[in-house]
Length: 220
Ligand code: UDP
Ligand code: BGC
Image 1 (tube, rainbow, N blue to C red):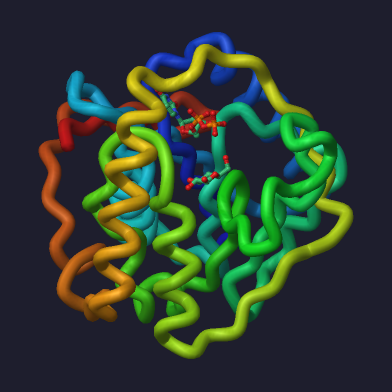
Image 2: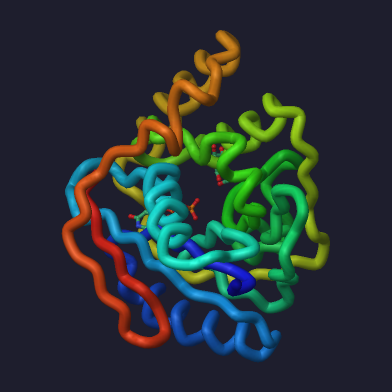
């Protein structure tokens, strides 16, 4: 069994990816961890869907090999001092992020880098597939955890450098729409079992393994 699968949601951030892959490989090797990095690329031109890509990554990697934990990892985050050891509960790792003035934007932030024991990811039914464009899929995951009465934690000292990138298209518009969707879902106490990993559908388009990472391309 390997220690961790790193799942990276990805589209069109070549400059970040070129730095991220060798950097993270070296960082994790130096910690003597056994790991694989999965870049999950959205191939279509629909708005980006981070939650759905993370579900694809979980589904793909967990069929390939057994991992103690699954780490959902943005491509613009370079660990300076991050503890990737296997947690027993969902754990937020990116707690001192350069782009947030070496902190977090709000107390219940659950984005950037998060680590899940496999059983817990299944129990919350993964991420929601419904958040297209920027925002809320990570907040929705936080509520899924709460809904199930599962404990969570944050590792302090999780220092992360941020890489520059252009913002997502129509960020504000998507953010507003996603925020409405999330509020509606959780006000109505939508059962997370209705939607998530168990309703995931996508079209695989290509797959490659070149030694230091897997590249899985899909249409969502
Ligand atoms: N992402 C990507 N291409 C995109 C949008 C997002 O690869 O067009 C991935 C990437 O891993 C990125 C993460 O999704 O780090 C979070 O999105 P983004 O960086 O846009 O969020 P922000 O850091 O601006 O809040
Ligand atoms: C969004 C999250 C995002 C966070 C930090 C929130 O408003 O809903 O998706 O990760 O801001 O940028």
